[in-house]
Length: 502
Image (cartoon, rainbow, N blue to C red; front, side, top):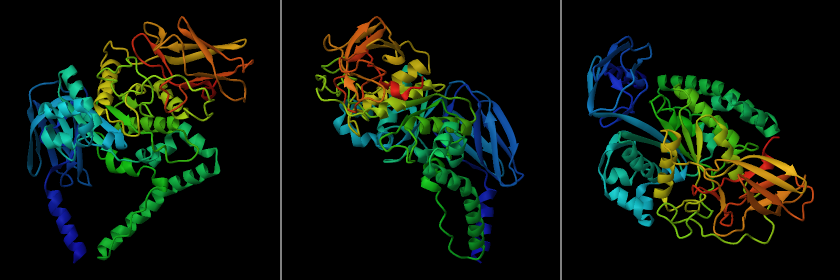
């Protein structure tokens, strides 16, 4: 009887033409690209979607699923979106603008309400609502106002408010993020197998090979569970526990990101790193690169922009040591330590910065913002992310980067480092002495280096390293002594030539 009742209930539900939960009143549809709309209906049922003079028709497939794509839309007045099938649905106050997805861990998930007490700028932004052209998605779409602001991601809200103001178009913000999560949980098992660099690393060690074998076997395990679950339902018995993917690879992608696909978006703001990748022998650059490629393939709308917030958070000095509104919580400049730096320090920073070499991928530099695992100045992180988006994605003129390692040459007892993004020129801030560079011979320890600026290059040397091979900069999570900037007031990125293939 239970199985029959379940079948009758499912039949009654399907009789209603439905929209996916992604679609509701107050939503923002992405401008200037095809816009997928999808839902369910009776198998074979004709469904018509209408919006702003467009009318798209389709038929629900044998599983009761249907989808259409609206032609590219332009910004305009709020409108109504209508879906007609056996039943009719009307969504009100639908806007067209830009949609951004935010994902990652706690620095993305934690709310405005948690940070507003220590961030006066964030508190003032929240109080200034409602923002009628800023919409927030948390299960359904809401106008950015009151408690809906306070419960929303502090980083995404701080990103969205200035972005909407600068662009003067509606902006929709979606968040799928969970505190304390490794990046390996945010890409599907198929993305792991499809990422050539990631797959190669895993194949290079026994633990990785074992993981790959389990990932390959998982679809069969899942299919067997689905068969058992269907039989249990038919027999009126409790459903067996659903098997988790190996090492939880992809569980959060399945829960928070896959349901959003293929909702048309402008880009992604990603903030994750403190919890690592969750898979031994894999660095953050390789895992995040596989994630970026996998998400883009899943969406099927090309290489949309991916902005990655730099990790670790803060830890460096700012151009203005007194603290501007943006960098008011930066670490104060200090003299360089006298003791040698630990060989493994800074690897996190140096690995992640390589993401700038991926197509349409940018790193939001944060070393000159507030530090800590959960930086209190979320308004600064959001504003910096917005500035990167305005220049990198929307064609603005504000420099997005400080000096970025380009190449190096060994010149006898010294090494000359060349940089990209020198802007108006290189400069040592907070004094004439350039700090933060280390030098090493082949397979030898690192030593602090004497460093000087020569045009668009930095020349480093040390009496302790007569035959230099490698150079690194900013190799520490707390690096308030590293003071290379360009004259556009942007701090230099960390780098380590031992990580770079010649």
